[in-house]
Image (cartoon, rainbow over the protein chains, first blue to last red):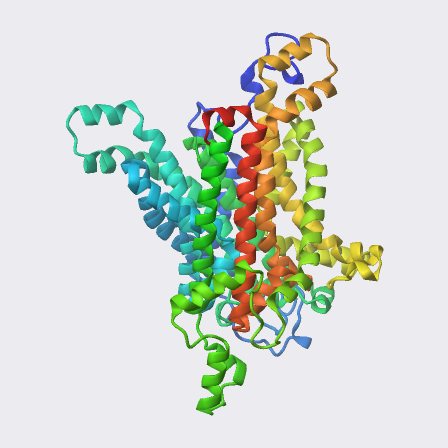
Length: 304
Length: 320
C-alpha cells in the first residue's frame, strides 16, 4: 500500500497498479506474449527458418568474393547485393543468413545440454537433499566461482575451435547456472501438497521425482534457459570476435570482428553494423520471450 | 556470536574454494595442448640434452603433484613464475596491466551507480507512468545489447564521425589526465550502458516493493517531503540486491572487460590472460587466471559478509 506513488492518489491505493513487475499473476492467458512478444517470435522464426533452409534460398555463396564489386566494399542496395558486401567482397545478406545457423546451433546445444545435465544435477540435489546436495552444489559453486569467459576461452583452447566444440564449451560453462535454477525450483515444489499427497498414496521416490516434480520444473527451467540462450549467443560471438573460433565458420561475431577495424568502420560501417544489429535484435527477442515466459511461470529470482 | 561463527564457516569454505580454484587452474594449463619446451625453443629444435635441461629448469621433469605443490607454494609467497617467451615475471606483467583494468572497472562502476540510483528512484516513484515505461524499456534493450555491438556503434559515431574521442588505444595517466580520460571514455560508456541497465531494474523493483510498506505510509503521514522518504527511508532497505550485484560485478569486471580491452586495444589484465593462453605461455596464463579467479572469489566472499552486516534479517537467520 503506497501513497507515495501518484498512481493511487485520490482513493484507496490499488497495489495492483503499482506492482507492475513480473511477479503479478496475469489472469488473461492470451496476454502471455503481448505485442512485443509476438514481434520477437516472428523475428526468431524468420532467423531460424532462413538459417535452416539457407542452401535452398536464392542467395550468393557466403564464402565467395564478388570480384565485380569495386574495391570489394559495396554499400547496401547496390550491385545486386541487398545488404552490400563485406571487407573482402562477400555478400552480407547471405552471410547473415548462414551465420544464423551458428547462433541456432549454439541456442539448441546450450538448451539441450544445459537442461539435461544441469537440470538433472539440480533436480537430484533439490530432491535428495542431504549429502548429495552438499556435494553437487559445492561442485556447482566452484565452477560458478570461476570467471566464465576465461573458463570458456581455456576450454575452447583445450578442445579446439570448430563449431561443435565451441557449442560444447559454452554448454559446459552454462551447466552450473541451470543446476542452481533447477535446484531452487525443485526445492519449492518438493514442499507442495501434491507431492505430500503422492507420498501418502505410497508413490516411490523415483515416481514422485519423474511424475510429480519434473513436469513442474521443466517449464520454469526452459524459461530461464531462454535467458541463457541470449547470453550464449553473445558468448559465441565473443569467441568469434576474439578470433578464437574456426575461421571457416560464418558467424555474426566473426562478421563484426571482420568489419570493426577503425579504417574499415569509417568507410564501410555497414560491414560491422549490420551483423551487430542482427545480433542485438536476436538477443533482444530471445530475452523478451524468456522474460514473458518467466513472468508467466513465475520463477522467483529470490529463490536462488 | 552468530555473525562471528558465520564468518568463520565462510572463511573455511572460502579457503577450500580458493584451493580448488588453484588446482583447477593448474590442471587447466596442464590440459591445454602444446609443450612449453617446444614453445620456448621453437619446433625445429632437436638437441635432446638442451631440451631436457630446459625441461628441468622449468620444473617440468617432476611429477604433477610436486609441480602443483611447487606452484601453490610459490603463488602463496607472491611468486607466479616468469613468462616462457618474454622472460618477464608474471607479477611484473600483472602490475603493468592492472592500472588500466582497474581504472576501467572503477570508472564504469562509479558512473553506473551515479546514473542508476536517481533514475531507478524516479522510475519507482512514478511506477507505471509513461516515463517509467520508457526507462524500463530502455533498460531492457540495453541489457540485450552485446557490448561489442554497442562498441562498434559508439566508435563509429563518436570517434570516426564526430571525432570527439580516439577510436582505439589507451593513454596512461602519465600522458595527462585529459588524454587518459578521453581514451577510456568509450569503453567506460559501453560498460556503463550494460551495468546501469541491470542496476536500474534491480533497484526499481525493490524500491516499488519497499514503497508499499507501512513505515513509508507512516513517514508520509508524518508529512515528510517525498524526496526525504525516498532517500532516507526507502533507499536503504531497497538497496541490498543492488549492493550484492554491484559487488559481484567487481568480480565479473576483472575478466569481463576482456572483449572491450581487445576491441579498444587497452592493455589490461583480461588481454594478458587471453594473449598468454593463445601464445601457449602457460606459466603466465596460470598465474593470471589464478589471480583473477581468486579476486573473483574474494569479492563474492566480501559481498556475502557485507550483506549480512547490512541486513539484520540475514544476520539473524544466518543464511544469505
